[in-house]
Length: 511
Image (cartoon, rainbow, N blue to C red):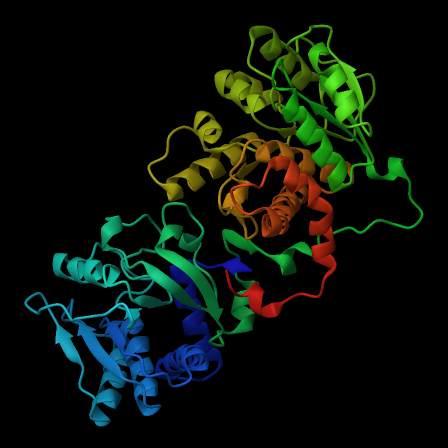
């Protein structure tokens, strides 16, 4: 699913109005009807007080039109016009007149008004600002937003939480509505998925308001949301007439004294993701533990006992994952640099492999093109430098990817895979996966997918999705606190099985 910018959404509105020969007011009525249907199907006429806070732009117009539908169906409502400007949109005024025709008079709020009383049992509809917000709310509006947030009432935001810009971090986090639920028109917004801005809503759902499909299909976007519909065309089921060699031979390189477990996790995950063969390359100290813990893999060792000092693989692997638990000793850095000069195919680099690249950026020129880098936030910062906000982080990651022709997996609650100027936002995963070794598992899974013939970008996108899905399945029995990296591995098979189940369309539109 594409993630459109605010300007692209405005263009989609215009395109739809022209092609379908409708008025902008008619499109607003569609949106309001969808909002009402969503609320009515859940409230079923319940006698609860609904407070609608409406701005004076098109977002406010949606709220005023919604108020009319709620009033006509007998709901107990109070409508407030947040009068933050002398300018009013045409469609807002049309719907305001319709409300007045029904003898329903909104209360106009300005800087001199007292704040409305709201109880925790009430419902708030937030339709103050939309996706076009380009400046910080005025002080009195910010104070109103803080009042709404402190009410403990259920807050339903129309399209986007008010006070949250769609293309940058907020000016002041206290001046953004904390939405219990966001009903997003037609497409999700990028701010729903970033750490700094995603905290302003608990859940979101898409409402299809009939924006023209031709525009939606043909318009290119910088970001794409990756869910089941996007993953299934990538999935390559196994062939009946195949053997272990059909699915590649992976090599997992890493480990040092006390950190062999990272290689164990990555190797096990690589096998479970489907690699036909897996060989671990570790220092001598890891030999016995790997041979006994994973009998299905083969083990090669460096002559050094406690860290890697030379990487010598006596065959040509199909895919390579490197860096986990490897350390950054001088001899290991030298060995890694020599290895990069020899390897010819795309590889997966994690953990200390990334730290070495950050220490010696001259090595980046030797990293094979379209290699996959899987940094956690601190490793990413070492690579691309500090960022001022999440949007700046994404731009820096894109620039780094363009310059070095590499794929970067920005790990987080919604991991984003970046390749050059495009980002792919993941929808699986949960807080239980914030645990030691989870990243090693991801590296192993991506390596295992590349071994099976998935292109590096596809392997990264699919691997991130499958990794999160395995965590989602695992947390259903372990709980957030008790989920371990090994538990994610144990559920990779269940994640594959989940892909084969009939899709639940309702859940695809709800996060």
